[in-house]
Image (cartoon, rainbow over all chains, first blue to last red; front, side):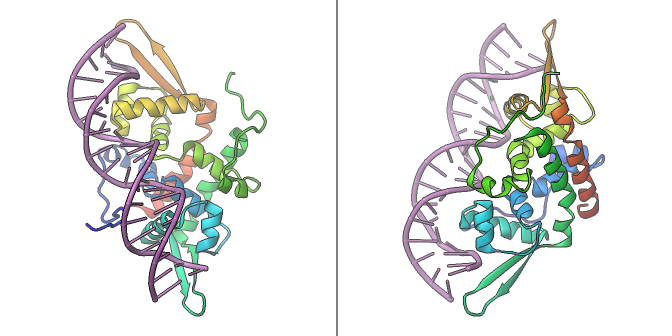
Length: 118
Length: 118
DNA sequence: CGGCATCCTTGGAGATACTG
DNA sequence: CAGTATCTCCAAGGATGCCG
């Protein structure tokens, strides 16, 4: 493999996942979106479309990292990308339905944070 | 109860966090618990007390990793540790109130997973 | 049984520079 | 503006061994 970023092909179930998948989907969900950059990026799209550099600023990720996170999220079907190629190119990202359905997760996190952080 | 909720702000906010902290606590929450091992470990304690090796099996983490994750979680006040030093030592871990309050998060993740995974 | 100490590998991620 | 290409660094984490 070249300098290919992390893969993300057919997902294999880990041993631990096997042991829990019958009971619930938390492990699966965590393995799909349970990294800080993914969560933060998705969360930063909660209010609608954003462009690359907006996300770069609001998430604090480097363009390199952000780019790969966005690729991952798009491959997983959590976000969509709309490009405008005219003039100065513009690239807009939005949550898909699948991604938007994570809102309750973020709300729960927000509630928890409001009680226990700060 | 020793685990008291928030106690005034004092946390240093990161740049990205600065930009969102006024709006919500998701970033803060994610930064505290948003790693796969932490989420999985907390989730594996959802039904109550578990011992070290039980967690090792159910999470799939190595003892080295699990040990450090548990230390982190305990420091953050998300779990508690009860040790029985007699005979063959036994160590039990449970969610604190703070940790237990994450259940809605896991429920939301579970719901999402049920809809979008599998 | 629980869990450090060590060694070692991997990839996550920043900084920087470059292109269409 | 929106990425890609490198280079590099460091932490996460597995494997193994030891020990109270």
